[in-house]
Image: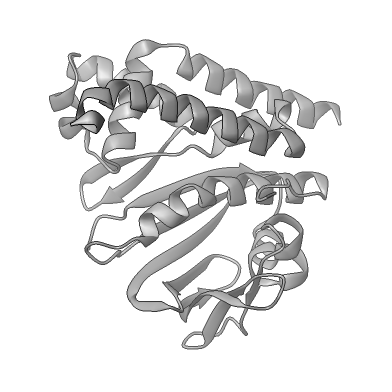
Length: 144
Length: 122
């Protein structure tokens, strides 16, 4: 197994089911992920896409593993540079009244430019997700 | 609201306590430079005993500033900046962010410029 490049965790006062919904349902992602949406039927082998508010595809890939509400593994690539493919894993684990969400981004190709693009974004997205689930309102994370 | 507030405040205390130490900041710098290091790799770059590094890492893990991944019997340490971002959210509002970013970039640019002056001329 290749060593993952980026690993992020956050403890959220929420349930695995709600966290799963927050990651996979456009009506929720829109509220904390800088108006972006994740679109798929989330079945293993299906395509998934990350859209901006104008419905342009920013990231695309396949659903490699899907075990709601515990584990979701996606391949991840810029549609303009499909060879620069990497892999994102969401792991959701209930701990008493909290839930631990771990996002691992790895399997980057040599010379990948994706590491640089996402390493600033993930902490923002995850802290906004936490705030959204705990308070009902996400952070304005990608304001221009 | 009270219990949630207490938890938030405990979490913040842990983060500030973890960051209020030069050795622990150095550990985070090491992970920033090269993510996913083992205890042995971290020790090789720092002038600290293995015991001290272990102790500091535990504190950083408790504050959730370091995330851990097991690869077989190897424990890999990752810099997890999510709690730092949450803290900054408390005092930085959405309109301020890009101004602060611009000021930060300006400072960085000016300082880099100063350091690189001989090279840039040459």
